[in-house]
Length: 560
Image (cartoon, rainbow, N blue to C red; front, side, top):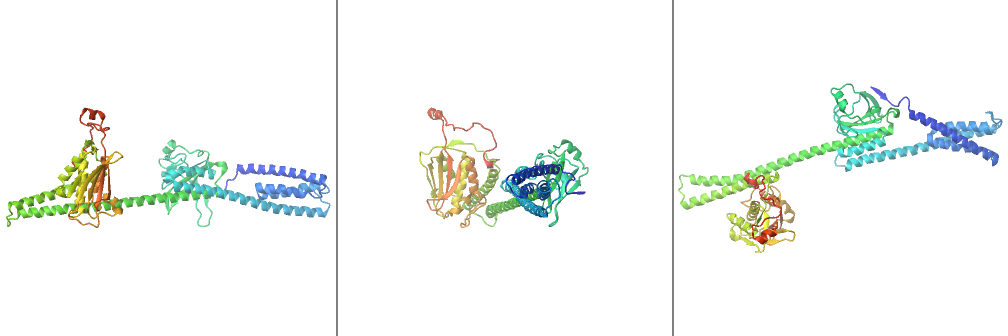
């Protein structure tokens, strides 16, 4: 394992040194011409300060030491060309020595100040670029739907900001098993590399170090290497790896490739890559925690739903079963000799409880099929008045006909519904009204034609009603009104099943305040459109847009 700090030879530095030498020669030549013009043409006694311009240029562009070298060359050139004796390095006048020394000191000080200012400006520019790159990474992670979506934008930003030939992100607990998330080879195995450089984070204030890592031969990697798509530049450049870790958990790696001549990333580039890797690690960890929290919440709600279902079903089963057993026990009691009338009443009560038990089973089955999208409605044209009156007659054991006022206008248009679905939904609503409206409360069923292609059917009761904030909750599974107690209270799924059945036929079911003072359930049923040929020829009306003889699964949820 080798620690790499800087390369032995940097071609970029050599080119920059040659450029600095050329610029220094050019600025000294220009300064010499200007000084000669000032002393010979303008009568300036000492024009040595002109050379300070060359020093400032070199300090601003190339730093302190090139500027110091330019200062020394300036002293030598001015001494050689402008002080007596000319074209010799000797100085006849001691005053000239003092001037040259003062000029050198001033030049070095100016070079130092100018170089310091240039370094600060360059550092500020680098910091600004780094801040923009990190802000872009943070923004991508914050606005994207997931880390995988943001990863491609992140690697592009890092490739430009860190001066890399290629950058990619891989996930896995070790480099050998990582799968690439984003980059030039996203979705495939990591490009094979026997040797790469790993960033070792310094403890506390210690500097980070790039360490040469030998991966060695790994089982199966030779086969992967023949199939993997190698990232651009990985065959001609150095590969660098930064671990993506959060809370001492290894999540993956940030990989980068750059040319051999560029050497190891500098402090600024290393800091940018390191901070970006930390942000990605935190985002990945947040996703993991969010996923775990979601799974825990789903499990909790599932357990709550199962508990509620078991409690409700057990209560719904226990009450009618207990009644049936008690009534049957009376009939089987040899010590009592019930009359024929009492026997008929007991048998009728047993039949009512058995029907109630059947309703419980039906609603549970219907709810499961509604949530499983197993409903298939067969839409046909029906007269709404016939469907409503039939449902009221079938519910006479629970809803006394004399307490239900049915007011349906004769001019109601036909509706396009599934008769069985609508009948069951309407019976559930009537049962709910009878259970919660209270004894003696009126129940009214009315209908009207809406302007948007629907027919509204309204079931109202004169009971205590429901607060406005709880109206939408009436259709939640296992919800029961807490302020009302009824001996016939069911599982709390009747209205939920009714809404599912109505929506299956293309309608809507909602709750609102009743004009009678209690609760109103509004059915919005699709109006039937009849073809002109059927109307003119007095044939059986044919609904528009409904396929005839279409095969499919059972349409009634409880018939399967």
